[in-house]
Image (cartoon, rainbow, N blue to C red; front, side, top):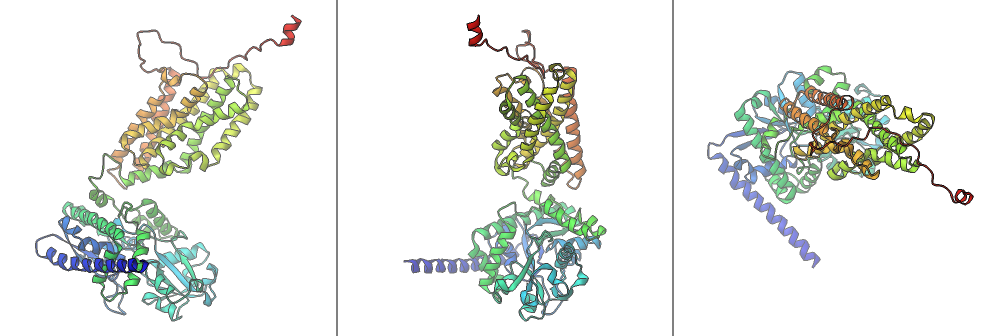
Length: 607
């Protein structure tokens, strides 16, 4: 039975491949018979599974559905032994409308005056590796010094250069030689090391050597790699609304092609073999599986991750090539990707605005400001414990509740907010212990009058206002990055600011003073809405990260000022039943007298 099922699977795969070939054979001529606008698509290598998703998009009619046709132009050398064609140069010369290229090449091209932009990113992770023979005496990075290394000089040499600098070496410490395809120089032992792609040459070399015989450096794992296989177009092409619309359709159809290929790999291999009939089907299948791992087609296909992009720019800047780094920083656009996903959901910020927001909120300076606000909340909670004459354990629990708002928020949001921040970073539990220990020592040396003074209350409320300003921004950021609809942002901001205080009031059996006319959560809600509005405006200028920074600072200053006005000027919000005299609001900080001890049994007996 098992053998029958195995044969059935093989037969099904063969049928799928044949059907795919028939689809290609009949679909392609149909596109050429009408006046459908044609996108000239320049590949950066010969036909192979590296481009399977694009082949599938054509074979399955996804381009035709979008009202465009695609003319594939293979890359690589024009003939064996010829120089490798530069896809970006073909793009600049007008031989293509869109091209597949590596980010390192694009950076160099922009530095040399070529106006090319990344409009979409196919590969999310680098695939470039350096593979060396251990029999050449290479067992650790330092052993590479003085060795012969093969390179293509198509951008991957920058990975090697940066990796060597990280280990105290330079390109002058090795001998670089233009290598032949498919790792032939390593197989024939004419070189000590060769550059290899994880989806191509790596598999070829594993067919000739044991893995234990090879010393492998994966540049992506070493943090020294540029992204490969992005889609690039000229500035003037993107500026043309008609061409930008066509490119958006191309990106949308290509994304569908890659997702279909991921779900139907047999079809993808068959379509690839139709494009490259002389290729090895087994090798193409292995290549395709590796491509899926580094491209991740089902995860916002085509969206350039600006964190990875920024890392590549930093690598370039670290190489002292300031001109190339400056040109590279604006060498991208999300306009085409956004147009391809124009109707994907409600009002949202652009990926660039989200990136800038996350980068600022996750920065060290913002973290320090946030800790200041958190510390103020903890001090306030501890003072409540002093007011209630709690023991040390009670003071610890009440101080812990100061971060309850962020905890509740993260539990509701879930996703990458779990595990909770208080468990991921020990600094929070450290602060709680410090507040309880030092607070206990200080309160024993201060009089009740000093602890209950207005000056002390104002200082504590000032620090708390810093926390409100910070948590308003942080709560808004959490909602936005989690992909929640915009109207949940103010709720997350309010919960971040006041959730801990409400938990504390519940535990101590007191009505939240913010419900009795003292504006607190309302300030966070208004501040969050204002911040979102400013970010929405900043989204129109995708390279202006300073606008996001300005929006955050304006929000923090405004929220801080509003909260301090409440504290110092006694501002109050409208309360229901205002015709009835309002009950007095409990002071912010009060120290109750010690409870009178009940008379003991001995005293009663004496009486």
